[in-house]
Image 1 (cartoon, rainbow, N blue to C red):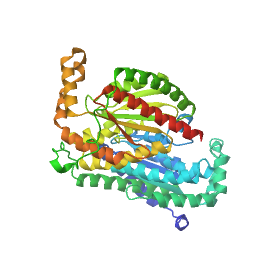
Image 2: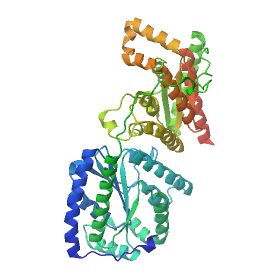
Image 3: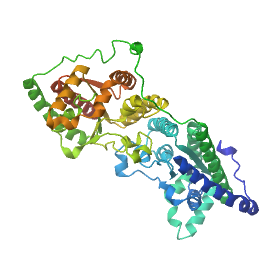
Image 4: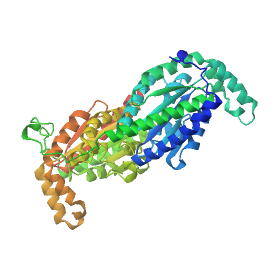
Length: 499
């Protein structure tokens, strides 16, 4: 592929002076239009060392409104970044609606720099390609425009530029051993780059190879490409009907094949107070020691709680955390997204709280809101919640691949028990704050929520992130089962790490 690129392409000064000022104006107009439309954009610049990425990015930033873009330079991961899944640091730097993020190097650092240095195995590299495709597909499906550039020069031109940089005291520092090593291994790099371009060149996140021998030619091609991509994206947005969502209708009687996974739950299971207290003391002691062993083994843990209103999530979490060292865990309550969160991909706010190695994050409600409350209440379009099943499985797979222990609880109660607890809250002054009009409204939609819950459990319970249903008509039983499940999951991960 790269050997077919004509690196001798040039622009005359006359043509450059004719085209470039016009392209600057057009790109500035595109930025303003994209900002008005709320279009987030990612522009990725990869290429050979000394191919001119910095100069091109500098020209772009001179053209754009500085209030609407950020430039993110990617180098070796920091110690903090290394303690989370490798894509975490890119999720943390995604654009919000109407914003541009320009990546000088990007997630392709994983399959190029790290792979060719031998920092990751070939198996990890193959998995990284799959995760990159998932990452880009999730972002573009969520409305982000992604365009990727590879700046190409040949080995001879690269060496010439290295020598020129070394002659100038102001730039000599740039030419490191890694620069010369890349030039020495140029053919090996060519093979890796061609594989990368072939594996990840998609219709929604395409690559453009930039013939970078002449800076003027490269500049005009980049500006022209970006202008056209933004125009096309804005035109497509105008042609697409707005995403309209309506609350889920009451399902027909035959919408669920009975008995469902929920119908088979034995809600008569219970514990006496004496049994509960005895088991609770044992499990708290066990969890305390397991938390510290997980810290030493650098094992991250994610625990997600979902369930019916008044099923006892808060009390369950309280009993789980009471015996833990508070320095090692965080509880993240999930409510309606903030304005900032709404301006990002819906998974962004959950990636922000992914624990680093050796720590525990407990989510009181989670990313499953997209296929539960957002689906039922019409807060997202049907195509969005349907797409979310695969996106959630991909998200959890990436966490599991990193070594994260994932525990997911659905707290299940029946309608009669829920009504009893609602009435208790209404009649108990100290608990009245727990009951809202929204709780009563949600109760009226039990059938819609039941349909959504069954589909969620069936489609997102995986080997690497299984669901555990807690029989929660008896709160004591549910609490003990939750603590037992968490302890067993962490214990199994520690033993596996030791093998």
